[in-house]
Image (cartoon, rainbow, N blue to C red; front, side):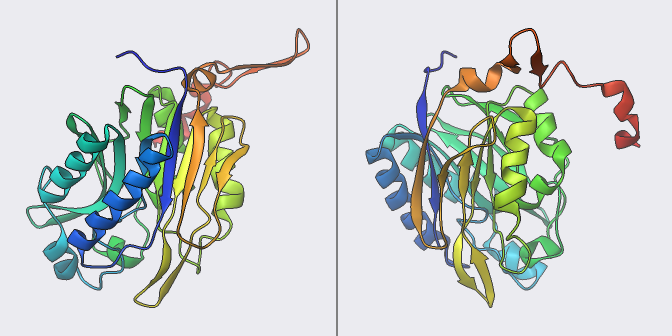
Length: 278
């Protein structure tokens, strides 16, 4: 699939309402239209943007969760089709009695896929969800090769590394960073994951307070050298950044020709990493 030289990615830092998917989908449609009008071709929403996050039991979460494909992914696809854009948004998936924290990836032609969160903290609905077992997938959106992690995944560097090895130009991280534990992540983890893999990294958090849990916002879109392209405070807002996929694909970095050159892919020593797989 041919891809543009550059495009604009948007991160929507918003305040979803727990247990109100229809209301949240209306909010997503409004923000997506704003992002589209600002020139964005890919719009990323927070973790559990459709469902809310701080559910108190498996049964409560399962009651709001949906099949995929299903009504909410159909609605997201309709938004994408109307605007001619791609969307990534978090929600809860029901598969039998299993509950998954997922991110759906949709485009003008429909559902591209969905990622089930692999690393689960003991927090919010993740106390009751099941670990994803499908690995880390990279999606060809026609704009770029996009990999998806969700929130706590970013604390495990292997998550981003596998996506880089799979050809990701951009890693999207829908997230719900709470005030109680997420404050250092925007400053240190996000730019590190971008720099060490030489990929764009878009971490999109929510804001507001849900059932006593306050979320910090501070979303960020970072370039392949770890430099911020767009950052947010703790209010609802739209982040915009220009993405050049070719910059992420060239892993060779020449700082001083013939004297200081590195290659983020070829300089790895996989044979020495075997303990990671034990």
